Image (cartoon, rainbow, N blue to C red; front, side, top):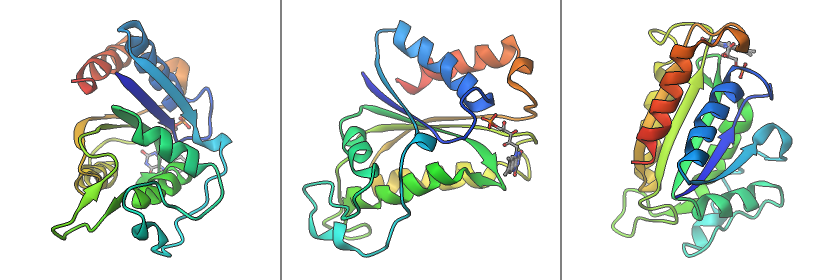
Length: 188
Ligand SMILES: Cc1cc2nc3c(=O)[nH]c(=O)nc-3n(C[C@H](O)[C@H](O)[C@H](O)COP(=O)(O)O)c2cc1C
């Protein structure tokens, strides 16, 4: 399976990247082809809401010239996309939010009979880490993510929240086990 992962946080050796590393190791070991993208290293502008992408239903049609175009092409070619982020003020980190907004260019005619998507049938999953608990803290990102699959016509492959995070060296074997189980689950 072609797997594309997006690391949305800034810290390359932080909690999110550490857990993502365990997931990627499990996926690679199981024979999957994993492409890993650190969004912090990319130039991704916010969606302009210009609607120009809606003129070209057959291709990735964003008019902006930045790194998102190539990443959107990679996303179209992936069987599974894993989005990951630290929780920032009850939401996704900025680089990942900007990229997800740019996926607006991947579909047309949402809520209409002609609804079509370049990522129809794709598996999509979300990993989020946070310092706090799930309750009264992390729900909004998971609610938003579970809605994203509708316009994308994608499959919700799974989601995982790792709360009470401090530093990566404090992530224990129980978390590693959860990461490995999550990796096995999201490939279906
Ligand atoms: C700007 C900012 C906002 C944050 N907001 C939240 C939050 O709303 N809820 C939470 O549980 N943790 C919050 N945190 C803590 C991080 O989500 C947590 O430490 C996370 O595991 C960091 O991941 P990283 O090591 O991959 O950067 C915030 C941290 C920062 C820097």
